[in-house]
Amino acid sequence: MKMTRDYVHETIDSEVETISGHYSLHKEAQISFGVRRVLYLIGSAVIDRSCCGVGGCLFALVPGYIVSWKYKRNKNGLPVSKVEPISERSAQQEIASILKIKEHVNQVQFL
Image (cartoon, rainbow, N blue to C red):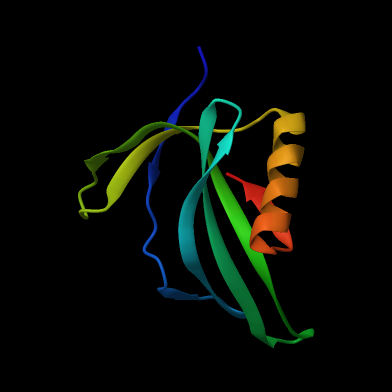
């Protein structure tokens, strides 16, 4: 049996401050991959308070394959889905390629 975990859905378009800048998530979406659905998020990061210079990037976060969509809420009222992390390297590479083309992101991270 595959390992699953709960994924708490992030608040879209709220900015998170970091020591060197900030980031925010702009979009939550799904893509088909074979017979399964993949949950992903699109965000941007801005580095504007770093001693090493300034910069930024667009990125995708991939919690995994959707097992159960928004099946409950956590104690803060945020929706929770059950996901299966994507650990197979070939699947990660293919999904990353799809997202880089579809969403014009620089980085894809699998959670």
